[in-house]
Image 1 (tube, rainbow, N blue to C red):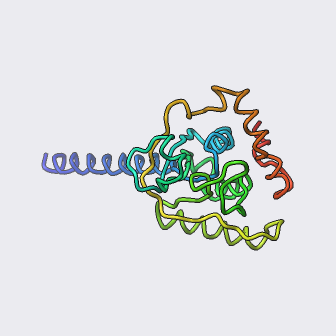
Image 2 (image 1 turned 180 degrees about the vertical axis):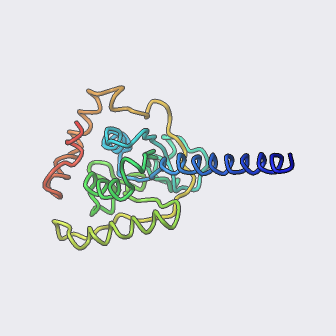
Length: 208
């Protein structure tokens, strides 16, 4: 009877340990990546179709004002970037793959903004949430500098992440809610033309 009494809690502890281990494995894959690539409508449309990406949220980060609105940020004096928060499954697509893809969806040589959008909110950046992300970003940037197909300097910053504020509902998945207006904006802004000039291809077209 004593042996039976002792073994039952031990087995329970083993089961609990196993459950905790499985829980850690299950929760290890989902991650988030924060990037600024100019107009967040465009960055969202570039990343949402990527396999392994489960959600992309447009928003603001990096500034000194809590809960900023689009009107406040667009004036350019709050310090915020237009940012997207990318939720992805690391078992399907790695942070390194997404980072390398990010470079080819932007003009990393423009210090004033992106394409037809100029000003502080439209500058490019990668925001690291921990040391591991920073190491991935730094390595990707080093590879880019060694192999970039153009001579201009890379000015995209690698910055520590700050609080992310989701943008207003009408900005979320704007390209699917207003495809004609979005398509006209992207074309008239010259985004894809400039990307093709820099990189020789438009990386996001593989998903459209």
